[in-house]
Image 1 (cartoon, one colour):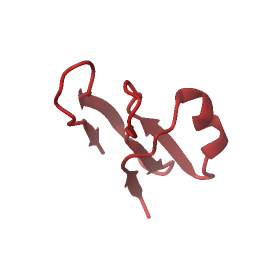
Image 2 (cartoon, rainbow, N blue to C red; image 1 turned 135 degrees about the vertical axis):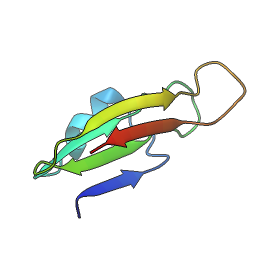
Image 3 (cartoon, helix red, strand yellow; image 1 turned 60 degrees about the horizontal axis):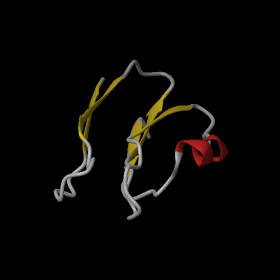
Amino acid sequence: MDIFAIMETNLTAEKLIYYQLNGYTLYSLPKYRQIASRILIGVSNSLCAEFKIVKEMGSSKDKSEIVKVNM
């Protein structure tokens, strides 16, 4: 598997260090609310990738989160 995405991971930056996967670089969208959120992307170390946050929940009522990964 070259790339994977997990939605609603509810991981904080502090807990992310416990979920490292050998052979993958992990990218995540920060958690801003109390509800389950956060997108976790894993990219194989054999690939070159650029991770970009497109939309965060922030303080708006909109619950959309979007990230873009250029490979």
